[in-house]
Every structure is written in C-alpha cells, then in structure tokens.
Length: 398
Image (tube, rainbow, N blue to C red; front, top):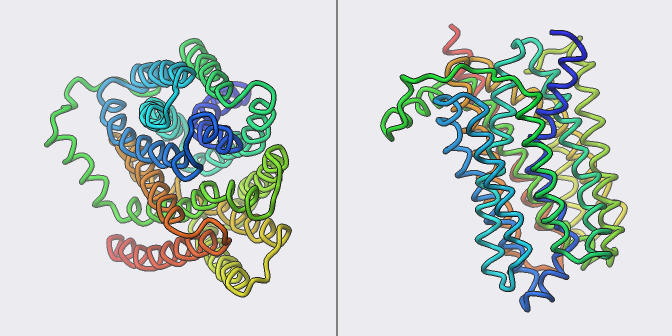
C-alpha cells in the first residue's frame, strides 16, 4: 500500500476513532457550568458521562454484526448521522435528565466510528503491520486529550457549555463527508450473515472462545478502565481538590496525553527488537508497580498536584505500550468475524470504563485515593488475566 494512501487512511481512521474520546473529554471542564445552568450538582452531571460509557459499550455490540452483514461504511454512515442529530439536540436541553438521555443516544451513534475504524485496520493491513498502524491510530486518538479539554475550556469560557456540542456535531459532519469521499469499503457485504439473535450470539461465542482474543482483549479493556477512572475523577481531583482553573485543567490534560502519545509512538520502534507479547507483559508489570506506589502515596497523604500528575503520566505511558499491542494480538486470529471481534473488544473497554466511573462516584469527592485505588485494581487484575490467558494460549498451540 502506497505511503501517501496509507497516511490518508490512517488519518481518517484515527479521526473516526478519536470521535469518542473527543466526546468524552471536551465537556469535562464544563461540569460546574452545566450543573449551575441546569440547576443540579456535579455528581448528577457526571451521570451523563456514565451513560455515555454505557451507550458506547452497548452500541458496539449492535454495530459489530451490522458491520459484518452490510460492510463497514453503511453502518458507519448511520451512526455518524445519529451522533450529529443528538449533538444538535443537546443545544436545546434545559434539564439534566434530558442531557443524560441524549448523551446515551450520542454514544450509540459515536461508537459506530470506533468499531468501524478498528475493523478496517484488520481489513486493510496485515497482521505484521497492525501493531504499527494501531500505534499510529493511537497518535491521532491521543491528540484528543491534548486538544479537547483545552479547547473545551476556552469554548465554555467564551460561548458557554452548549458550544461544545455544536463543535462535536460539526466535527462529525466533517468525518461523515471524509468517510463518504475518501474511505474505501474494506469488507464485502455478506448477505448470508444473519442478524437474528441466535446466529449473532453464536458469532460472538466463536470470538470469545479464542484464547488470544479473550486474553488480550481483557488486558486492553481492564487497563483502559484505569484510564477512565482518571478521566471521570480528574475534574474533582484537579479543579476541586487542587483548585486548578478550567483552562489550567485543560492544559494538564494536554500535558498528560503527551506521555500517552510519546510511549505509543516509541512502541512502534521497539517492535523492531521485541515482540508484542513481551512488550505487553513488561509494560503491564511496570504499570502495576507505578499504580501501587501511587495508591500508597495517596493513602499516606504524600501527594500534591505535581506528584499526582507524575504518577498519572507513568500509568498512561505504560498504557501507550499496552494498548496497541494488546489490540493487535486480540484481533489477529480473525478475518471473517473481525467486526464482531472489534465490537466485543470495544464493548469490554467501554463497559469496564463505565464500571470504573461508577466506582469512583461512590467515594468521597474531597480525596484523591479513589483514583489510584481503581487504577491499581485494574493493573493487577489485567496482569492476572495475562498470566492465566497465556497458559491457555500455550495449551491450545500445543
């Protein structure tokens, strides 16, 4: 595949995959403004984030079979259109319940972009190319935490929190047009693919029975739940506990995303010398150590703004190694069911992300330790899954 064509494809696929994190991150600095405008409190506003995670998790299970039945582009068009309509509707809400429902619908539309993007990587690139392509996608995706909260903070300060949803709607329109004009159909529609519940469940079961899938998909999803614990608790930790301004919060988010970007790109280079499996193991082991130290420091009241940022940066840096390789390894065994596999992987990520966000909301809002606690549980659980799963993979090979 020509380099210029590959670059264009990766850019479009990366932007599609970035639509979800943009939708998550961009309105975070506006939680206080939303609460004031809709006459509620910040914990109720955070429910709109939880329902977004639930919607994007459930929606991915819907789009997986649709992508395998109708090809990649038609379901993508439908989802982006739904996202655009729900984003515009957010401009007219006057109650928090309305925003919560619309965020769920927005998520269902949004997840078509991420599922299609991941499946098309599997369609368009070889197994050997996939980890590097996923790392390139990570570069585009990771720009969103740099740009989204910062841009959101300035937009909210200048035009109010509803301007964020206008921006997201316009962003989706651009993605829809780019998909129509520049994205190839990478998978021939399969008329024989049934959308009845039983065949769909059977296809999911085929995917779930593959040891490489459930091992590395779980590793990716569980470590990602630590990322969502950070995202959902960061407005409270930085703006309430450490008294950072809305725009300052956006810049901290941007700084932390540099580590995610940087390490995901370093991953592309070290793949020349190390296998994806080795990188995942050692990065996950390091993540466990960093998260435990983070938790101990939080419990001992040894943290301040700068040490908190440092520990989060180390956690995200390890994730930059883990996620591209785990994603590629989980999808490697599939060709025919790549859409279903991609959907399951995404559903696991967002479903566990919703649980992590819910867990954070159960604790007191004036302490830091719940964030590293969830991160630590995530990292240790992922390591246990990797160890057990690797035994299953070896048993199947032998």
